[in-house]
Image (tube, rainbow, N blue to C red; front, side, top):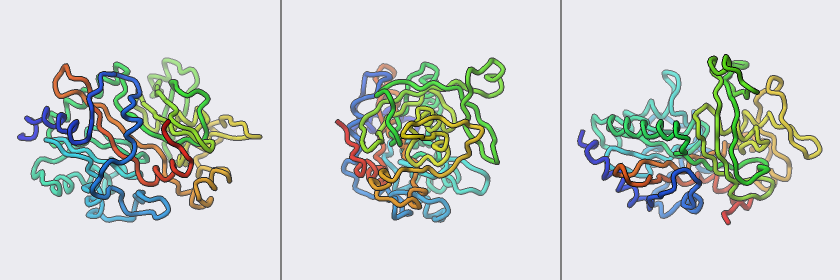
Length: 344
């Protein structure tokens, strides 16, 4: 357990190695996350091969197990002590069915590739399959347990630890606020979908309905789209995609929940969930032109949702939290450039 005893050194090294500064602010959107989105001095490529139309995109089924290990090794943001941070490509599932190629399924080979020997990595925190961004791994069970307790305690206290960046089709009415919705999972036509529940009863809560909460902040707007920072304060599958659809501003590349937003004479409204099936996101001609995409290319547009920042506990109990950052994928940065979305 040699890696476990350097836990403090690991977090201290992250602050030095990644230019991370301790921040005394507990819950707000920090300015550091807003001005550190672009890559800084990366010396090795982190974008996996795959789709030429969307650089940096990893297409499932187009790579072997060995190639996936190589991609993940190149996606390592930093290593300190028992902790390893990856910048996960979009579309790569963390877990899956037996026999499926997932992050979890190749952790033994990745551990060997990183020279960890018998100290196999385990997942501490990760972005979902359709999202890109940070994955925190640990080769020390004690370190992983301490971090997971920190994340669980922060969630109970409604203190955000994860900040996502998203591009939305549409601009939220207010520049900052919170989204609250009761959600449940329903198996519809062979697919598990998130469904909102109006005024849930106690019985609904007992049967799996969950009250969910996210904070959002609009960072930039242009071409009818917005660059938004999202902080989930609860954990539920596809929570952020469902929340933004309820705001009539679905995430760009959301080919599941964007179909719930209809438009008539330029006015958006929510369609009934029971009569709306998932379908490829439909973008208007003006937006397609700005993105330099055809309709068929837009049908393959990846979800523009990126886990950009994770807050970790300080090195010592009284130290302020530190932040881990993951640069945006190339296709995400290209979209920002096409839409003229920049920070003020």
